[in-house]
Image (tube, rainbow, N blue to C red; front, side):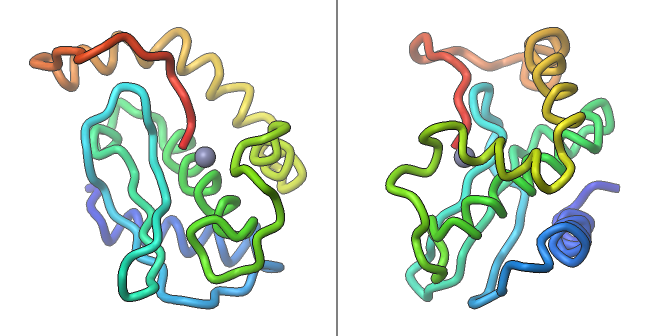
Length: 147
Ligand SMILES: [Zn+2]
């Protein structure tokens, strides 16, 4: 079952194996939250200085491939490593400028997953989203973007 504990264990595994160069300088919370169409996850800094990583809770459904969850966790961890919403030194001016997140992910071995994710967003996600959140009414038209 995909619950918050499952998610945290997955996140820790990714950090321990693929982000060993990144120091864990504060408490990092990971949980499922929200039912977004245009966002897979985000990272923010809480008042108590913990970092909180949130993954779209629609991804609890087994129809969503696990690699999508892994890639979203890794994406947010790259933000953390670049000093965005983390206590680490800020390495860039903007979190997504110049494709810095995907470049970092590719260097860490996620290149094939990134290609598969592109396909997933284009071919599978629109219909999956409709099925997982049938009552969704868009407030305004918005393009998919990463956070
Ligand atoms: Zn991002």
